[in-house]
Length: 68
Picture 1 (cartoon, rainbow, N blue to C red):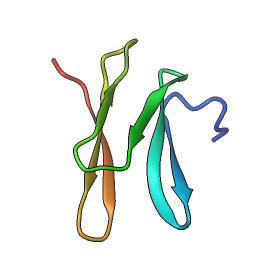
Picture 2 (cartoon, rainbow, N blue to C red; picture 1 turned 30 degrees about the vertical axis):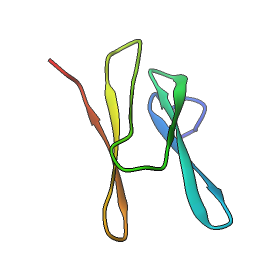
Picture 3 (cartoon, rainbow, N blue to C red; picture 1 turned 120 degrees about the vertical axis):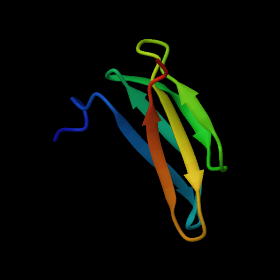
Picture 4 (cartoon, rainbow, N blue to C red; picture 1 turned 90 degrees about the vertical axis):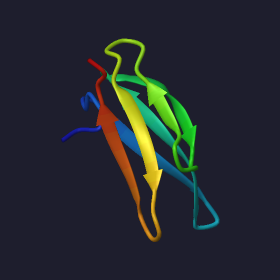
């Protein structure tokens, strides 16, 4: 898959081997950035999809939820 054609994409930004933020692309457009902190989220203004970050002991999850 070409990153330029992906409709949804996440880019994890690091500094000195630490995750510092995640940039979010949804509906083919950059919608913003969230800090690497548990519970952060970003809503796509175009489709309403909520992109969530959940940090656990030794890993993290990025999930999508679309409110009804």
